[in-house]
Image (cartoon, rainbow, N blue to C red; front, side, top):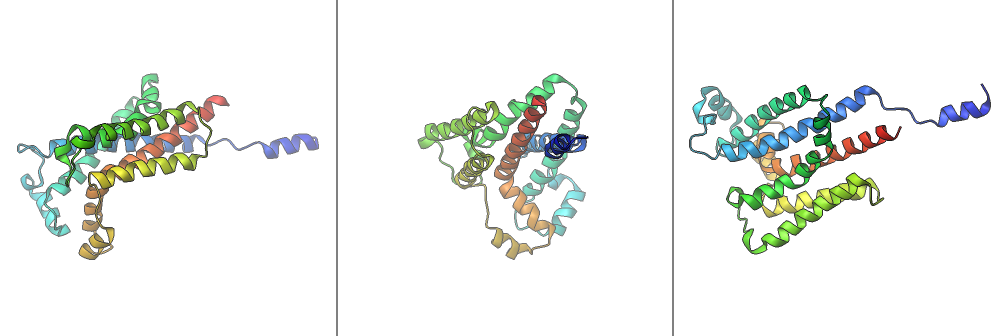
Length: 237
């Protein structure tokens, strides 16, 4: 083997393992499933006839009592049933993994959903906000902001603008932070930790409830971006 061949072999980047590619796709699929499930459960648990309410299950009531939550039992509904439904949707996606249409949806519509589901939900159902959310006077501006976020996602997907990935991450963080503040889907982390304790399950159930929409949306967007870039890189090899 010549020195040139040795240098070529050394400089050649290592190909990602099949397990790495699978883990990234599974993460993307699960976060998409969780994002979708969070919205579905948020809408359904508000109905008076919601059959899965904590109050209807002695086991969940017992769990709620042990968590010693200061918030109503409905927050436990949101967290538990969203994760269980997400697992079911994830398994359905896994069963359709070999279909070309499933792969196409994960590369395209999943990104649209990740970026716009949270703001679109509150624009369509403003009464579901956890606090004051007067969208009507500024609805057009909020729609424009959501469209700009979607446009950034399209530019990223089509690779039309060459910018460092950190710029897209920063824009996504700004987008979801803005909607978290606006709706408002946030709570004082220090206040919750002081209220329940750092290492108690109740603390993290409460935090998951208040930050669910923006945090799931943000990480779902990042997972989609990583999945798209990985898919595009494999296609170019």
